[in-house]
Image (cartoon, rainbow, N blue to C red):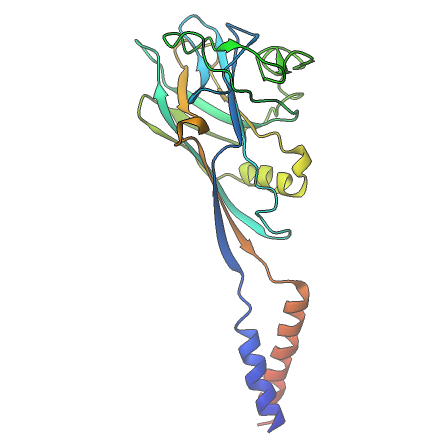
Length: 255
């Protein structure tokens, strides 16, 4: 009697210890633009941000930060990371498609509430306020980047986390899941104090007219980050399941 009862209970436990797949969807907590043409101006409060090279050969780089502190359980296996954003502006004429990349940022930066001075010149921003990120400063006006616009290998990674071709106005840009994108999120999950987000930039900064504007979080339909993960049962749960499995085996042997 008891072995059969043990076997039934054990089987119930053994086959009811799944790994639970979950997903979170986030908008940025901060996003802004660094303008080479106006190195002490900011754009943190606009409903768009810029990246790529303008017709006048000046570069734009964007910063994006997502805060998922406490949303992914410790020990959970992150299975997929995907980032999407909408193109809302492009050069008036002769726009050029190019590859854009995400690179992990190594230093803190600020997003203020500055919008552009002239609505007809969205590439110039407005005078930076204290703490804003600009081309010259990651926190205006007392903490500069290692070099203007940020230095690869110092302020942001030399390695690409994910890249994609950005075409034109109205496109939905998707940075697909990659091992390095997953690694970034895993690292930030374990070290939230070192989460400074990603730098968005074109990989062909010497090519003019690759600049694009993307809908920011202020627009209401800004970038969307989707993180899929699997919650793995605690080791004690697996131990108990293994003990139960042993009970199933023992009961079968006694028949």
